[in-house]
Image (cartoon, rainbow, N blue to C red; front, side, top):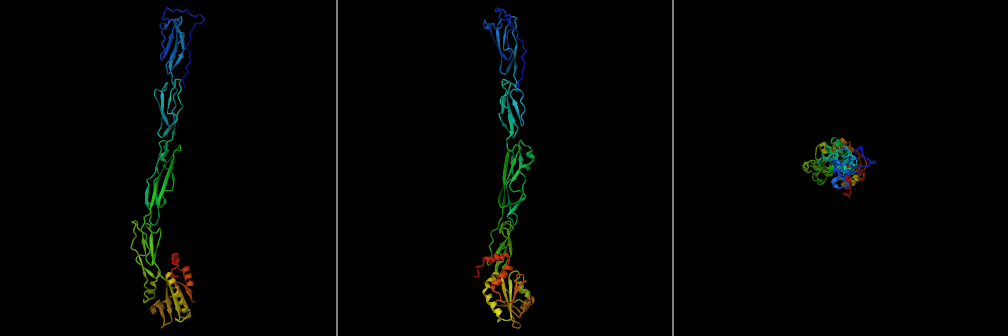
Length: 439
């Protein structure tokens, strides 16, 4: 606000007794001068008689000054002017400081002085950036406002490439929080935790391929900033393994990724030669050499039961058929049905052993290969197989007695029992794929 000064200057007039004008003395009153202003005087006698009796002066202040006193005075007969006047410098009120900013004035708070406002780092003007002191003692415009309009700064961690863990298609990845700063909101410099994660948390398992991680942050004025980086999981892989001829492979994990292992298995009637499993290495190569499946060579002429059974252990199942003689009706019927089901027995890895007759004419054979008498006796003793009547004993791959039959059995009945109780899930799937093989 401007300063108001009450005008208490006297105005000496003698209106009731007007003076007798005497124009002979040109300097009746002293010459009128107005500091920081202008006194414009005139006389009835002309410009040379500006101070003569009866002269009148109009008072006017320069720009930036206010007139105090009379704006018009007259030279009286008392040789004095009818009043006084002076020019006082005008000033505008002190400007208030603005939050988050400051100002600098050209000539303080004088008239025509311009004050330029600046905002603190991180803030921007809302309004005019300067104000000018007007001649009437007021400021132009309105006080500006410094608002936080700059978004914060956020720097994400660098993108990263990680190999998948052994035997997995994923990897656990960690990273440091992003670096956050703001020129206005200094609390962000210390609180990187205020960054909001959009995506998967660090320390968890990331899938194969690119995973985009985003962060966003807000300052106190709700200005927003964001950043992103990529976590890429690379699954190192080995060349695809192929199943050996007359065999197949079973792999865990994804089959050919780093750390996966593949197990070789041979079809019925074949046995494995070489290592049974291989592992995919970090280098992208498989350890060891490929295995192969070769026809199973059964040595029927071994001297002990153990030597015979060891050849089948965890490789094939055994179906031991016993009959009093070759003319036994049950044997003949069963023999006809088995000859027709030879392919199905091979698919299920079942080897037939026949025990026929009684000593000294007793015979034991695997197809055309004869067994030693000690081995035949060992089979009868170990599995309690009688010579007196027809019977069949089904052994699993570990040589355990799983089922006995005392009457001829059709291939369908034999296979149904085998499929339900002796085959594992993998063998059932393989059997399903080869179901038309024996047609």
